[in-house]
Image (cartoon, rainbow, N blue to C red):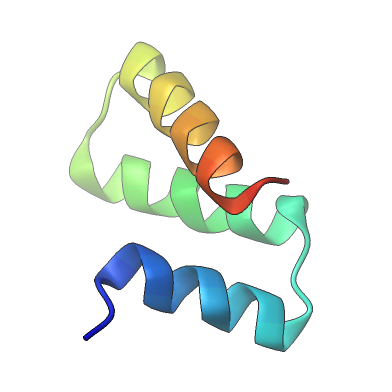
Length: 53
């Protein structure tokens, strides 16, 4: 069974999304969660590394 990150990664690839799209998703989620700019930057780097973008 795939975990959420793997499901998201597969959906991104299947939809042909680029980093700008993914970054927008992360930024929207960060705003919704009330993350600090530092937390947001850290998470963006984690996502970029995971997705290899």
